Length: 79
Image 1 (cartoon, rainbow, N blue to C red):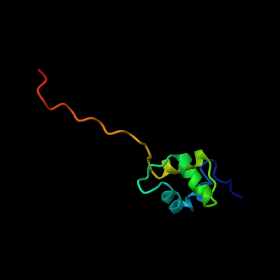
Image 2: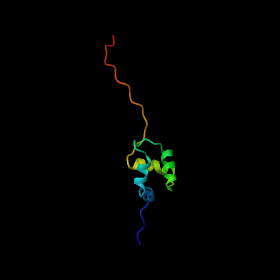
Image 3: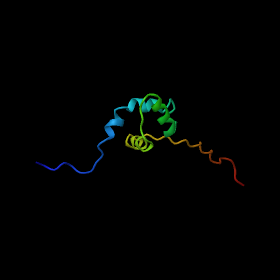
């Protein structure tokens, strides 16, 4: 009998099975916070922890940062 592999992530399949529902819960602009996504998913009968969703987004390279636009650079004379 061979020893089983150690370490690694074994439970992501549960949340990855609901990828479409999670992406829909992000909204049309994909700008909802994790707590807002959790609330939308809970209404659909899906319950995931904050950390599980955070790891899901990191694993699938999904960012949800709400950053203001940077101001334009100065193009006029400075003196």
